[in-house]
Length: 234
Image (cartoon, rainbow, N blue to C red):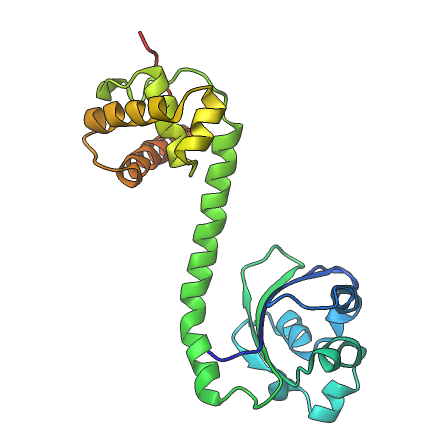
């Protein structure tokens, strides 16, 4: 959908508690401070907060042009950027917080058809966002997991070192990073992966990662935590 800016905006319960990430980045950077100071004035944000309905809304749906332009938020941020029109919708956020995606334009308001398209897309974007949060949580728990022997891959015959390499592949590391972390050469990492692929019955790092995450998910179902497995070399 054509837009001059797309931003992810997080508002906390108190005035001044606001953060925005914008593509392209907003310049000068001081505008982010001005946004944080006045974000709670935004008429669409106020409507989201008061109704709890996060479906797409245009500024023009809730405020007259003169009313919008009278806000300090407009004068100190949007007018500087040349933003005259905006549509926004929310994503899931903790109680008392607002997380919204906003699309902004300098010319031509967003049409009814564009708002309807965002309304159809929003459930899918919410699911993608929840998936990203869950994946991040899994990676965090993986990173915090103790590096101790596990028996989950024993049935596949992986050595401890091979399992260490597969674990790091599943967490998204490249061979160079794995080699540096384990004090190995990249060639040795490649050999460990070749052996692991053969034992796991897979042909690529993506297939090995998928299998490792499946093992992690099974462990989580079993005991409530996620750790990609190591195995004893004995």
